Image (cartoon, rainbow, N blue to C red; front, side, top):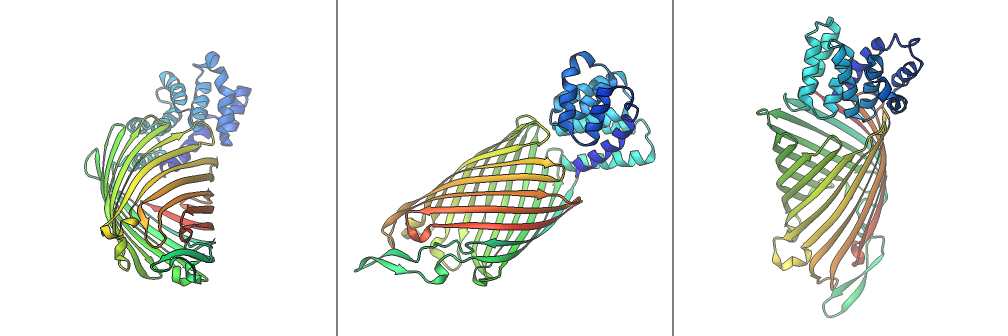
Length: 444
């Protein structure tokens, strides 16, 4: 929301600020045209080689500042705009753009100061109103005022394996007195495909308790209707409530969580637990995250599966420079699930995993993304039904697009694939899902 308001504000001022360049300088005129077309990187590449000879030229520094900030070279852009303001302290256009640069660089207080400086120059009523809205957006983005958000999402898709079951028609199981026997699986125990409709929604809030401490909470739910097999229709409801403490570049979060997962309207699993996270914004391009969570899992119809699950991991995110604004995030984690009833310790297992996610801005309305993960699960003891200690290797990936046809709306086509390889045939399966979702976001 803040980025959109800053962009509208900047476009309004940019056309005024560059209207005199058409005949003044061919290079600057070309750069201004590129910026008006949102071709920021070519504009930056045109202007940057001239900095040593043209630094100090107000028009040049202004255009370089705009192009640099919009193409991800925030520090270079801020330096250029500071040269403009050193000569013209009352230049509203430069102050508006440097405010955007400060905010993108994580300097919200400096961004607020620049907007307030513009207000002190007694701009006209329309411009003053726009600045006030941007100041409010800065406060919301930095947690200085209470914010609310909600969304509703509907989708259509095809799922090749709605019950995450094996495609094998027989499995070998141990029967006392008979040994290992090949058993034929019924249809419900084998993979089934279906088209489906999905609907989800949620709401959240964040309220500052002090300058550094904020309270947040959320509730969301989802349901899916399979066209062919309603016996496997899934639905869930999630709740969370927590606190975030932010000090300089560090954020500390603790949250209570609750989840109910149903299949065909019947409760399959309940879980409640706590999540902890530490996040450090190393610089404007790198972020480190360390997290841990613990949950109590309850299965109303299969109590032998009731367990305590703990998991912790570390993640690193990096935002690359450039007009495509590529972002990559990698995570590695380890976990343990211990069943409550030690008689069934063969269900307890260790979890090892890694995940990578990438996204890139194709244009101002279209974002491409991809993610992949690999997880290994190793059970503690031999399964008496199969005379083996279960080991699973799971790989999955997803690719998709996020298209923003208008503010607040997102259309998301996605293709995902999952393969679970197990040393016990009953648990090996693969799954392909093709979907298109339509989402509406609300923020206030």
